[in-house]
Image (cartoon, rainbow, N blue to C red; front, side, top):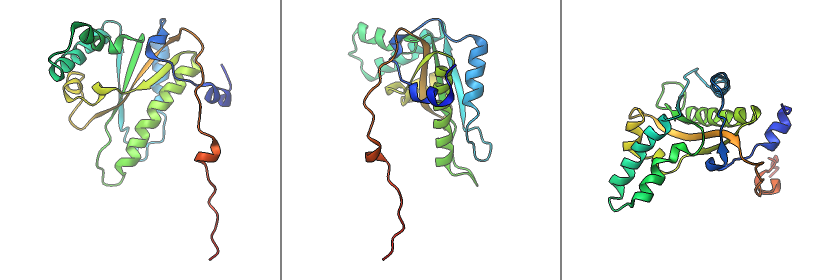
Length: 192
């Protein structure tokens, strides 16, 4: 297993179709979810939860996605519907990170949303640490109420991302990253 800094330095996203079996084992999935749950969480609210899509359940969930697509686009062709049906079957394991962030008397909703994002990123990093590839994506169906209802989300819940996980077909390539000089500044005390 790479050391922590090397792990962070080498993490890359792979397209879901570039992730094949084997998927993480039951014990590895428990490790992934345990790590994803160990994020900053002001107020101990656990403003996130996880939905796992494995095996045939990926296609069953895909039926809900295809039905919502058909409702949005009644003229959709069979090959388009088939593509939508397979959205969650592109990788051997998909874990939806669901945000339960909301108004709270003490904890700002924004802090809860950040905790949800931290849970999703920790899940991606944990998958990489175990030797798997991962991709955090949302796509249109993460925002479609028909799909969310079919997946069992409550009215106040949102999908922060679908994390596609599997064994990489090949080593991922890096993409250009912003120059640090463009994204980092130092605060300097002003003497007017």
